Length: 310
Image 1 (tube, rainbow, N blue to C red):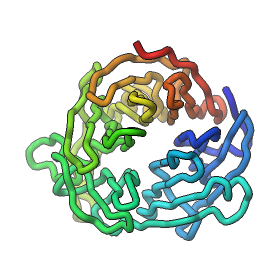
Image 2: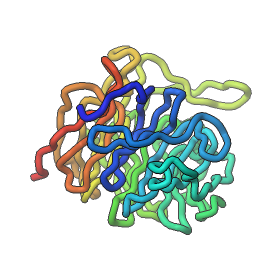
Image 3: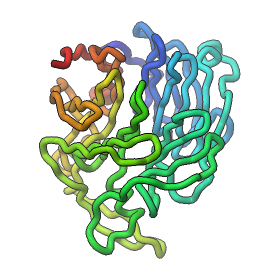
């Protein structure tokens, strides 16, 4: 364990930015904590809709130099650029905001360049949506996920939702599915390169129900969790795996205790077992250190030493 403290409410996502560890928090206090050398250096943000406020952060994307970070807030369908030096200094840190202008339900957005943002979501015509750097929808791309006959595309997209991450050095994206052991790897233009499957090879368990006049995804205690988080480091793709249904691990099925290491051609190299269930992960560029969020018996940030890939 490298950090625990009263400042952690309900820690969720992790990312590495230079020598700092960024931790999102959905506990109702600060939205983002900056931690280094076992100490909390600063916190930023709160719940809301205004500048510097967040509703549901889904992606944390530090810049290559570690001096800034893009946060995608699902609740406000908005990307916010924070200057980390300003966060540490306790002064105005918001440098830019970009609202994704669409009603198609973008769920996980990654800023690829100044002119391109890519998001997964509840899209009807393709798996991914491509936006301009200012948030205007250009087009959708990639094949829709598999679905039974008659299942509306947005419902299937919801069933196959997941974590979208970018390769740190190459023009590739990966979507690790939350309710299946399935990883889709894309080019930046939305072209599907390959689909990788984990050892269990299971699909989402769901039904279609109509609520408020619209079809929605309905799930029960038999819903199984697959890749609950993912991180890209070096040439490796690290996917945090649960494998449990809600009935098998009530209230904690969305925590994983295995990390599956893939390459970006979709080959599974290693399955690593953690000593306790965790919620979010981040991995150093050399692939030797993994950081993780736990909740029980109290919130904490853990550190694991990983074996070198063979």
